[in-house]
View (cartoon, one colour):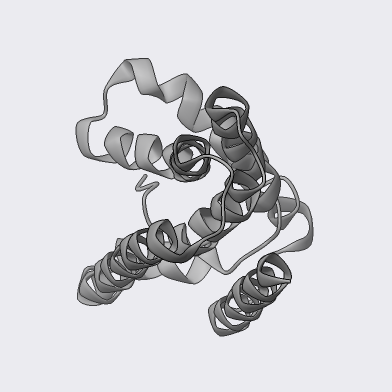
Length: 162
């Protein structure tokens, strides 16, 4: 099973990490809160089923990989942008919180590529949270998930700038 294709965007996780990290001065606390925020936010159903189906269907695999690649590029741009314009207490806490917020998806991606057995328990933990509600109540449509996440990021930016 491919685990890397998901729709809770790295951009959303990075934005949440940035908002948390901007308010902190402690990198260790920031990293921990970043990881915790990832698991909590991933519990919200967010359109993954369609991307995973695209990835599994060979004729649509390029679309799924393209989506993930675009998301990674936007997340990288957001991080570099925020490092220059954000008002934060500690650049290290800010950076560590973002790193913690995206790390779970990076580790799942590493497992998907390497199939390294040491990562398997983490992947199971990640998907326990990831599928917590969507397994019981179903997923949302990808387009709604993406629009909702874009609105959330804009609101988060507005809140942070106040």
